[in-house]
Image 1 (cartoon, rainbow, N blue to C red):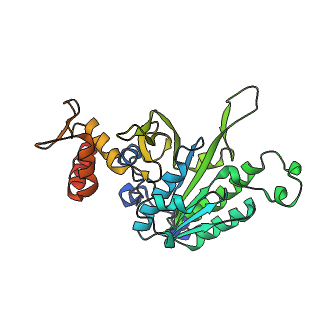
Image 2: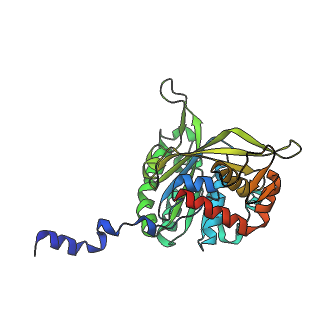
Image 3: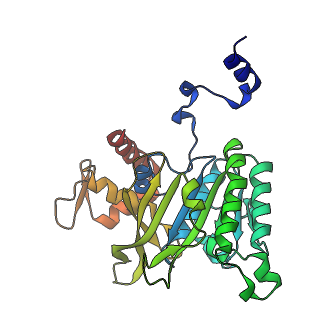
Length: 318
């Protein structure tokens, strides 16, 4: 018996050959935005770590709750670790289809407790989704029990590094998705970048996908009377193990309602020529002409047309 054969026999449950690694076997969870899903190639993958980061009020929590809704449709239980203590019933109500009875909201007291809770979730509940909001709110135990001035430099970064080491393996084995929400903050350093994210580099290093969310240039969405009812969010994919990085997608979000899925699909269908928008003030789909808002109304009511357009979009991107 050769040494190589002995080794493979001893560690056979730890080894697979390259031909067994197939991306088609990976199950994904949609972001609810057609544009963003296509830009990602494969949206959020079971067993992976994802980071959503950006400035305040750009829709990070909204996007995370949309992912939670789609995870529930796949029969998964979702845990939302609310370190910021900001999640409210109104936010949950705005996401259509979210089952609040299958969303567990967790309130840890310290960063160390958060690490232990996340480790137990990914080890003990296969297939679950864990959302942490947010990394910048992690509270080291020394700050909780003693004077905050005794906190050591980079304490949050060390907590994140410890957390990532503990959860990466179990999350992959048990096909758990972990979503970290992070904030961009300003630094006081004289040299180097003026903006940074909390938690050091550990999360970004281990994340399969990182999305930088910011306000788009054409950011405000108005109704027919000129009232501002939402905004477009630019999602730039900084890191992506499933597709090429640095693709961008503009996602429309309506205040109080979440991602405007019909408008998202409508604008993409126009861009790729499925919907003809050459006539001023009118759009054409099939043999019929519509006002833009009329076709959006059709989208919202007629699932068969939505599926038909989605099928045409997928044909163009495969």
